[in-house]
Length: 65
Image (cartoon, rainbow, N blue to C red; front, side, top):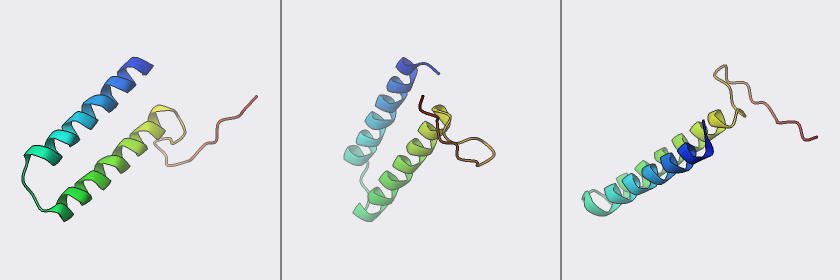
C-alpha cells in the first residue's frame, strides 16, 4: 500500500466521521462509542498496513539497524 493511498484513506475516514458527528443527530454517548470504535479500527488497520500486526495475531517488532 502506498503512502498516498494511506493518507487519502485516513482523510476520507476522518471526513466521514466528522460528517456523522455533525449532521446525524444522536445521543452524545453513542457518538463517543462510535468515535472510539472507529479510532480502534483505524489503529488496528494501520498496524496491519505497516506489518506490525499479522493476520495470525502475532505482534512483530521491526528491527532497527
